[in-house]
Structures are given as structure tokens and as C-alpha cells.
Length: 185
Image (cartoon, rainbow, N blue to C red; front, side, top):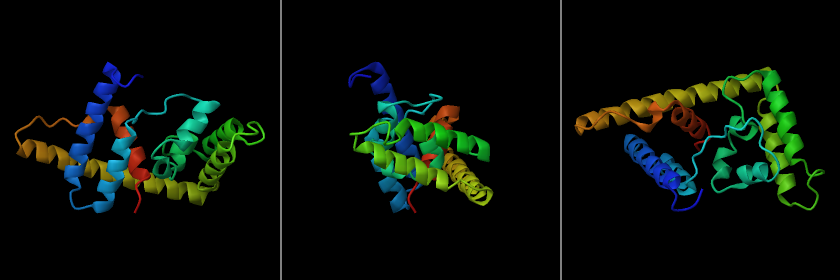
């Protein structure tokens, strides 16, 4: 979308509201504030809804601004939902590794780093114990987000404002949980 498009303005306003509510709920958490500042700078909180990201789009997604945090989340890298099975993780790894494999993209310096990101993500969930750990981390992130939403609603109520937060939209909620999984500690 173009810089001045209605979608970009609406999207930017939504991101700003999201950032304001969540940062207020975490005013004492310096790491969280730094993380949110970087994510807000991305200006692209779009959810990956494509069943398969191909070619240039796969490289761009894994190398875009802010990806160092987002790529900590193996679900984000492999385009999986939390709670996936080992078979789904393996299938996603195969699909993504084929998309970014250096042998398929000779001469592209991003191919080897993208392949390593995909490989590292799969290694975080390649057996049942590791996958269980990833699922527990995501469950913890969901719990944190739920608490933050509750705090944000409480703050809005105290200010006499409508208790509506962007996470009321299921896509925004999933996106926030996904970003919280990638939060640096």
C-alpha cells in the first residue's frame, strides 16, 4: 500500500492506539517499552495469512525491520499457530526451507541467512519436549496479553472512556500474542 493510502492511515492509527494502551499497561517495564517502540516503527503489523509465502516475499518477511525479535518466535518464522502438532511443524519446515534454500537462490546473500532462521526455528520444536516448551511459552504470552488487556480496559474505564481495545479483533489478538512470544527478556 502507498504511504498516504487510507489503509496505511487506518493501520498506523490502529498501531498507535495499540501501542499507547499496551505501553500504559506496562509503564514500569523498560524492556517492553523498548520492544514496542521498535515494533511500532515497523508500521506493518499485518498478519501473515498466506498459506505459503513464496520467493521474494519469504526473504522480505524474514529480513524486514524488527525481524530480529519476531524471528525469535518459531511459530512466526514457520507460519504456524501456537499449539500445532509435530507433523504440522515438520511440514511447515519443509515448505519454508524449500522456499528459501540457498541452492534454489544462488547469488542471493539473504538465502543462507533465511535458511538458517528457518532451520533454527524448526530445531526449537523438532521433538515433543521442545514443542511442548514452545507451546508453554506461547500459553504464557497469551496469559500476559490477557492481563495487559485487562489493565488497559481498567485504565480506559478509569478515564471514563469506552473499554474497547484493538485486541477485541481476533486477528489483532493473535498478532499481539505472537509478538509477545518474541518479546526479549
